[in-house]
Image (cartoon, rainbow, N blue to C red; front, side, top):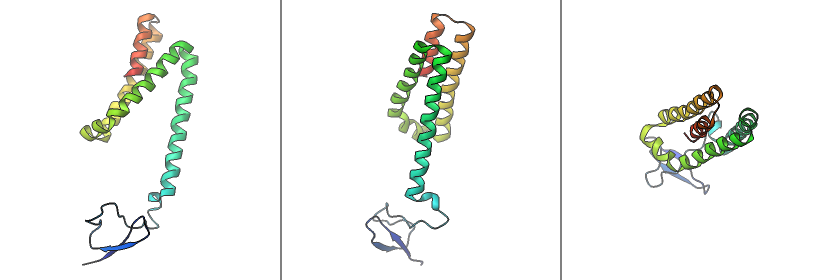
Length: 140
């Protein structure tokens, strides 16, 4: 039976014959040179890049919405999108566990598609009911 040496956060080592310790499941093997992306530094850099891209995208969305819809409707749409993001974050873990990651991302993409369709209706038929429809599309 092969014995592996594992490192835990307190810089102590323990010996175990399994991939993970049966007494402490949080003890992981040290990262190899081929698993550089699993290091805390690489994960922190990746998360920082993702946040940079996300906030750059939302800022761009806000500027384009203001120039496309006008400042009042754009503020209503962006507020509705942010409100739906905030509320959906409360239920997202349950939904992802039930339907899976791919299905959850597909549902999220359909929400954006709904906003685009509602925006097209607003541009084809500009009226007060289509303004409500666009804000409702932002909520979805």
